[in-house]
Length: 121
Image 1 (tube, rainbow, N blue to C red):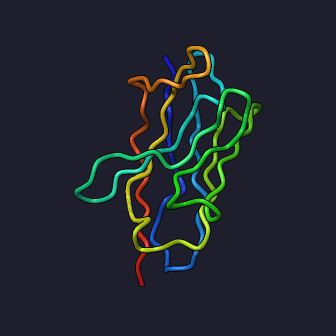
Image 2 (cartoon, rainbow, N blue to C red):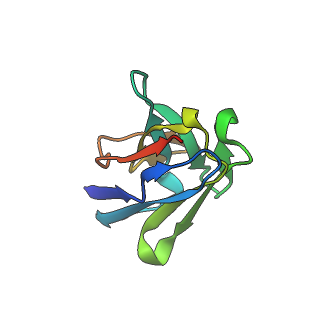
Image 3 (tube, helix red, strand yellow):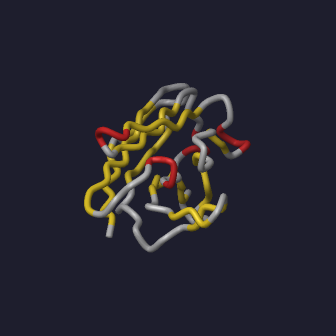
């Protein structure tokens, strides 16, 4: 089973930037199967960014143009670069060790513990 550890969160002012990391260890791992989710206070977990099976990046409308997902196979790490942060980006950010079945990405029970991002002045 893959173990995931998120890091890089913190308190940042509106307009600021952060880079989150999701480091994986354990079983075989594909960076293209690791989506980023977030859970704002009092709300459900939502998809932020992910790759397609062939490596195309997809984003939630709310973060398009501001967030960038990337990965480093050699380091077994997926990143989420977040720019122009807004208060509504405040959430706990999680990554998941997903699995592809055909072209569809399925979530598994392998979540990290999350990293808190707070955007406030």
